[in-house]
Image (cartoon, rainbow, N blue to C red):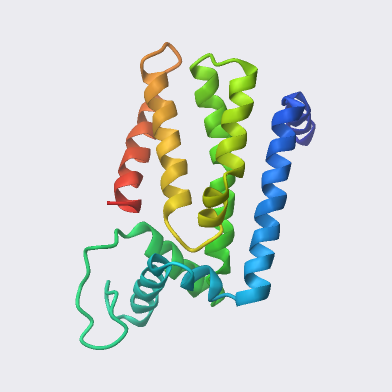
Length: 195
């Protein structure tokens, strides 16, 4: 099995592989920089959304319901949709830390590059445009930063790209029953990640 995977990795265009490696390096460096300068709270406190997601996660674990308020009365909240707070709660419950959620977000964010590559191939773009598309999604500064924070954007964007790819395949002969189920699930997840 590992030989098959190694063969597939070697068959990837070296330029695409290099873009992926650079993006991975930048994510690791950014993660290290945020953690070393600001600690774990840096992944949450830089943007208000991270704070509200974390507060809901803390309230869920404490039995205070789905609320953004930090003190009683814990009023129910419908502003934030549930997937990110639930994933954060799972991260906190399993490790006592938000870092596993941030690492999950980085991995999900890195998946945007192969998804853009597949979409560009479906559009039959030239190699040059495919490389530019992958480089932009993988190395654009604000996307890099947002992906390395405790936010919903990485999961939303990756799920949206998957839905776009599956919708494109729905119009072609490559569409299968599994693709239909994947499309339905990805659209359902989208509505639970961002309103």
